[in-house]
Image 1 (cartoon, helix red, strand yellow):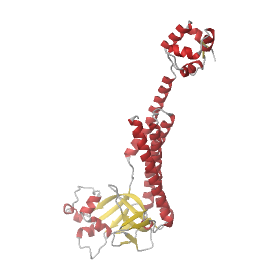
Image 2: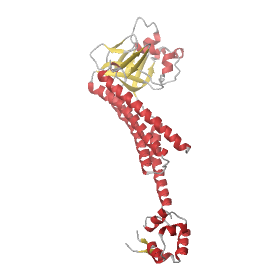
Image 3: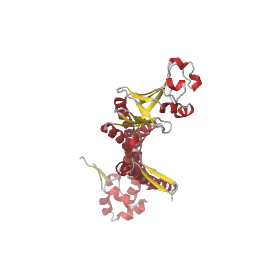
Image 4: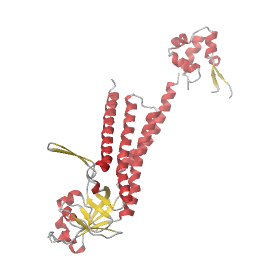
Length: 290
Length: 68
């Protein structure tokens, strides 16, 4: 058997398995919202516990950029808390927050947004809980990898629905990408390299990649209009005996969560179909030359 | 296509069967059928040369241009 054919068949079945597993996870997440315990299915098996789905009460992920704002009065001492910046405010990374205990400080801060000033208290786990009848029901700093996110739930059902659609839309796009990848692999396993269907699947995969990056652009406008800048300001607490934490504030700005490699890949795939079309035409011409 | 292939006519004149010609030229009967039905996009000079040699004819006897 041709090694390419063998490898493509193997990948095809691997992708099929991934589609089934991911679809199952998506269905479980959706079902968990209706039938689960706070959006989750918790299965206990002896000592191990399997949790499926996300907590409904914690809301949905919104990509943000974090900026630490340091008052001029303490800027001269910023080296002491690990901040090294000249004139601009530095970006905070997860490591920076963990290393400098600022994460703890954030958990004790007040939260306000540009349009609607509000007071939000925190529980012991770093989750913000609303005290007044206000816009945010829940807000929490939730980094994923190198990206910063806020998990938020608002009192407006329409806003919550919009945030939920983004999460499910991303999952559906991922499933769509895997389906087209599986179809491409199936064609390759047949050892048909210049077929019309292969070119169609590659073109569709390219468009899905491009569309997947259009979603964050649309949502970045919506996020900015809905939430604006979310500022976490120092809250004077007797338990926090650290002058820096009492004076620092952190701003969360909704940001464009775009992956340029996906735009590049999408464009390359769409252009690649032109090459396949040319190859198909040459192959056809060659086959019909007697 | 304005080029008409008259291979059938020449085969009938020479009382030769398609598969016999295909075998002598060294192509498959499927390819000869593509040529006969006018589906072929191109014909190699070497193939034309062999056909003319076997059927003892000129290229013009096999192919004809007809205005559409």
